[in-house]
Length: 216
Image (tube, rainbow, N blue to C red; front, side):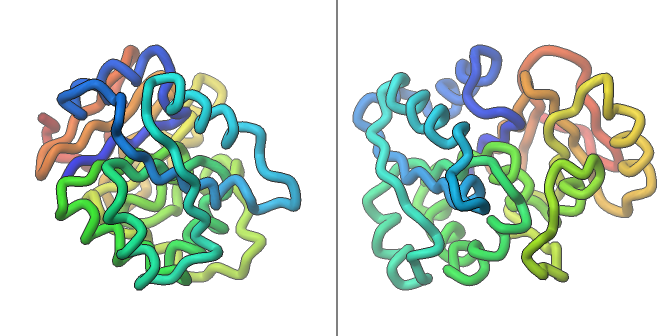
């Protein structure tokens, strides 16, 4: 199982580490680009277009998959044609709602078992973990969608807190210390590289982990 969980996507600091995880050039690799988290408002968040363009710039072949229009059967069939699933950032609560409704939480496990690679950005990284509670810590997301169960997909045995910086570090550290689960907080220049049962934080700067076992 291979995952690449980022805070701000594929920038100059994180991209080289993804390329190492791929083990080959991106040219010819098919990416299922999931923008659902950026569609929680009437107008899609601008960052979705930026992330899609970045993938194409790197050489990936990108095709959009909207979870709001899918079900588990259609996803299982559709994902057979892809090498990588890229889950865009946006509102983590909205994304998790459609992850469950579409059956993506089940289909993605089959995809990963076939040696597919999962890339998450912010909300896309939150949902990969045990739960998405860190999305509430800095009030960066709003739960406007009646979501009461914040349990994530559990692809990794920790939770992710994205967009760590000097302005919110004290808030994140305090919340992480009170948490009963492992927490990994990422700056926008960092990512978590997961390969099987091993993981490591990549990118520059101090690595912030709470309640975690020693990484790779």
